[in-house]
Length: 181
Length: 136
Image (cartoon, rainbow over all chains, first blue to last red; front, side, top):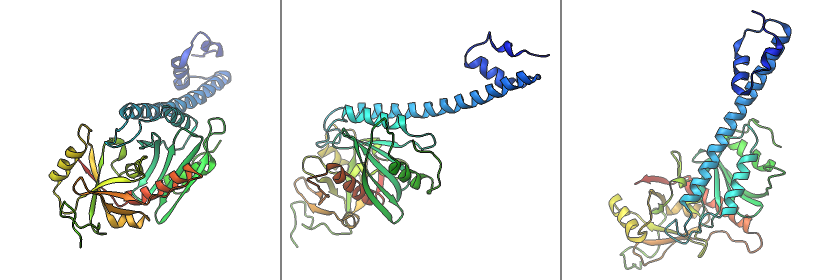
């Protein structure tokens, strides 16, 4: 049975689009074009959803950590509670991480900052501190290679290229797998 | 050699095991203990540890309960003094309490606090790579 292009019109929402994209029933060239466009859109939306889902989970972990370390002395010593501004900055960092960059693990620091760690193994890791300022302290171990540096960060310009390259070197053995902003 | 009230030597030997208690499950994962677990106290710039050489696990947890009352303990990280010194830091005995010591000599900067943190983070990662996690 032939279907017209306008058959899509009364339908709305992702469900309808998904059904259309996955139906594989288009015969006319117009319907095939629409199906191809729908296919592409669904793939893109699915990727975005997966990405958002992972980032949403990461952001939830930051909030859980903030709750866990909300009182001074959470380390049994003189640790400060996680700083609310540091929490917001860590969330902003996660939001602007480019697609393809693995998401980090999080840990509390005694001065109220949040540690973002990309860990490949005991001696291959990239560790970054998000505090209240707009400069990020970070360090890495890469086998026998090691180092530390500081990079400026703001939400508008995105994650500094040096930081992205550092994460990439650890997590992907230097193979390019993402684009910087 | 001088002895401390605990009976331990005044100088922490390179081969001695040290223990640091982990009060957040976020400070470790299945692979390793994270650098943040070793970062120094913001007030005195030192990292508190206990000399664990030859002690049983039970005595380790007892030490934690004695000195971290009311704090939820997730485990401990055990590492050798030599790995601290290899990171250009030092371990100094500091009693009381018995068996207590501090990791000292963390890099400092009067002009650039972020660079100070970056350098400290590298030292912490160097210790972490040799550390053994003990879950409670």
